[in-house]
Amino acid sequence: MIETELAIVGAGLAGMTAARTAFDAGTRPLILEAGHRIGGRIEGLPDADGRVVGDLGPSWVWPAFQPGIQRWLDRLDLPVFDQYEHGDAVLDGFAPTPMRHQLPGQFGMARIVGGPSRLVEAMAAPLDAGCFHYGSPVESIRQRDDGRLEVHRQSGPPVIAGQVLVAAPPRRVAERITLPASIDPGLHRALAGQSTWMAAQAKAIIQYAHPFWRDAGLSGRIASRVGPLFEAHDHTSAEGDAALFGFISTPLSERRERSLEQPIIDQLTRCLGPQAAQPDAVVIRDWAMDDTVCSEADRREPPAHPSVGPATLRAPHLGGRLWFCAAETADQSTGLLEGALLAGEAAARGALEQRPQVA
Image 1 (spheres, rainbow, N blue to C red):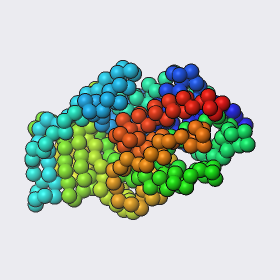
Image 2: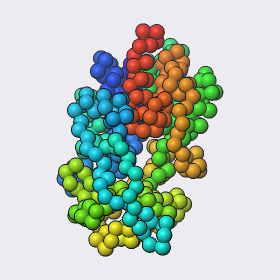
Image 3: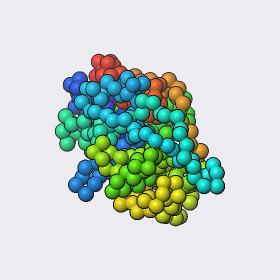
Image 4: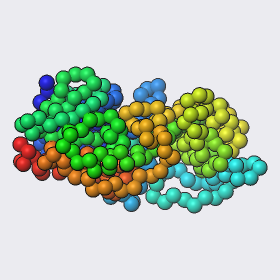
């Protein structure tokens, strides 16, 4: 049995923001992570030397319009650079052959130097290794007679915590974690009803020796009706590692059955020219295959951006002992990186404020 003041379930961005907020306020959190790394849906693509050259999960931020992002970037001293948009886009499937077209710019879109992985790593930097328990999927949370919460994992001893912050996608919580019987049924409905942004999506990064599309006056942006990438963008790193990335439109059932690497190369060759036919590598991350992120409900339903969920997702439960935080629980930038930051910070601050009542 392990005892702690504060347990955090999940080491994604919301969980790490909550952990950092608690740590900076003088509380050492214990973090239970189902996987074997921090970051959750944030995952960097490393090169042979371990340097992150691409983002297999979310990539974009809008600092000019997201004060929560800007505040944390400033605090952690993380620079950004503009998403490359110079030149024409390519429309694929809108005519017999792909055609160049000037699409409206996406003003304010930026990328963190080194990727969002740097953000998560900076959050975790002051925490000692003993704070983290990896390979610890949580199966149930129950309330003890003394009011504290008992967290049961698939393996390892139970964790007894004065307060618990569940920092995982709401639908995954609803499907995988048994909550105390005294919890309001409305919370269960809210958790199950909140879709997980991009959870069933697959993302491809296509690496090249040189960003040849820029030489041709192309931005690297593709909008396609035929796929397998329904959209693509320049993904060259701040250090100049040339790449494109795209979101895959192929249905999940087909993604499980066939390789998409060559069809992606064929599409890029069709849209960008023969130089696209010789990539250095094609890396595909299918988030629908990740049970720590994607729920069965997310696999069944068509993709949709989550709306702001009911207030019960952001409220304290069990007298301030149980809290929930994820990008999808946020009431601002729901589903986005800023949403995860805001949700994690708010839950940690709320829990710390109510600690005198639950101690």
